[in-house]
Amino acid sequence: MKLPGKMNQRSEDIRRRRLNQSHTTQQSAKQRKNRVVAPAVPPVMARTPIAGVSRPVSESGKKSRRLYNVSLDAAHGAEMSLPALPRLILSWRLVSILLLGGLGFALYHFWESPAYRVDAPEISGLKRININQVTTELGLIGEPVFMLDAQTIRSDLLTTFPEFSDAEVKIELPNTVWITVTERVPVLAWIRGGESYLVDAQGITFPARNVGLSGSYPSVEAAGNPPVIILPDEEEPTLRDATISKITGVLLPQLSPQDQVKPLLSPEMVQAILLVHEQAPAGSKIIYDPIHGLGWTDRRGWMVYMGGEKDAAVKIQVYRAIFEQLKAEDVRPTMISVEYVHAPYYRLEQ
Image (cartoon, rainbow, N blue to C red):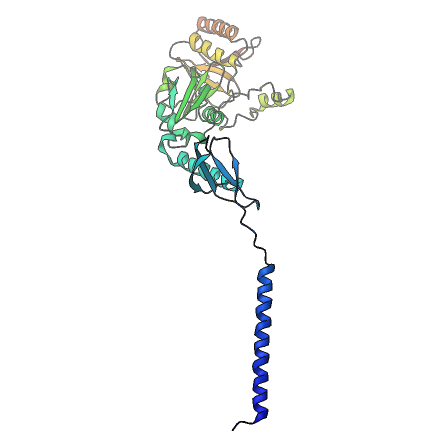
């Protein structure tokens, strides 16, 4: 049997629970009533210059897909929507990367492709030099053509081959190098210490690369080189130095071996050598002595010295007059010197 107090407490709990549920239901209904549902905003369509095509405009500024509506009947406003396409926007960074990649690929292609490497230079104007010698010295075979410089090739060519007075170089794509050279014309051979050099009319020496070539020109056997040729932009030796060199036989500083392009002989000395070769008795050997200058060894056994190149024709006439006088006196000399035109002398056999 239940007690009356407990039954009253239970009834009070049920009443309070129902009251709370009713209050919660009323608040939910009130909130639903006050809630305003905003209708969805339809996309705004913007016409592009292409007729009948529209694209959506995003209010938030975010990227959106392009919508294409094609007009079917303009009078009734009928349109057909095409599938939406994503909008592609290329940034400058992406464009730069693409350009850099393309440039790198092009450089790699040009560098590695045999179509842009020199097979062999086209050389014209050679007369006494073999084309293989020039090709080997230049070392252009297999080089990328876009890495070559015409002025550098020309400078190397004239430095390596002093026998070239001038050269012209042209580079053409894809792999052609045109070279036109002008060779110096040798007029005599200068022999010293067993080495032969060819000399042109300007006195410039260059090596006789082909064996036996020097034998076809008038040759001079030299015991030393002549005084240094002073170019217009160089300082001339003083009279004191020149006098001491003449008296003592100690030569002034000579032409450095590596600078073959600098003239070894003056044009006047070259002409004097050619004159001696023409006027000396047949079989005479032309010589050069650093002290006594130019001369020759007569086949009859005596030496003739002419000194420098000045007044070479007059000195030859003076020599002939002395020789005729000695011949008339039946005197055999060992040396005749006409180094000084106004003071010639000779030496007799003991």
